[in-house]
Image (cartoon, rainbow, N blue to C red; front, top):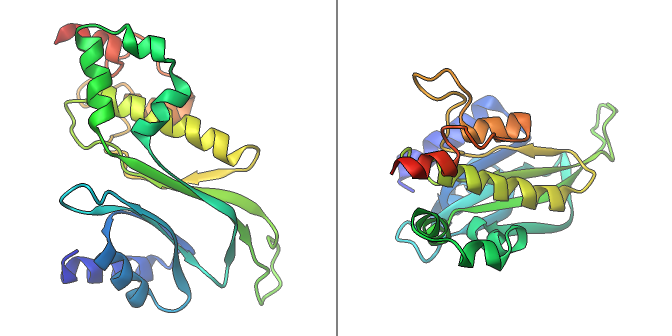
Length: 216
């Protein structure tokens, strides 16, 4: 990260004064600089980077140590690695034409996600909440607006992986989904937004890969 970018990110976190901060496009130098800039009460408790890409960046979760403690192991995964856990080999091997290209494009993307379980500590003012456990997660989906179907499937894989990780706990997802709530000029929820807010996306949705790939 450029020095001014680290300073700006640290200033935003300090101004908003959160107990948790989920950041994307964080490289090794930026992570260390942010930990230093945010002070001793903040700690990077989970991070993963794409070291095979030129940017060498990824996602990171910063936690205020006086408010939370980490419970159990964290989760780190590339979205493409979750494909085999949620789609059979037959579905992918039998794909032809644009469908085959879709699966290939999805596998080429190195977008990742991280998550962990936290427990709230009792604060010095005696307020309630101590012992409460929940999960926090962040991710960074593919950027290109011309591939909403790819982002939609990445969002599906993210949701399924988080569902398995959090089990019965609540989860807070703070991510760069590279998506808007609504499709411009259509007045309809985007595929990614609709999936996370409604739990499903109909097959005739304009961001769904079935109608979208037929147009190409």
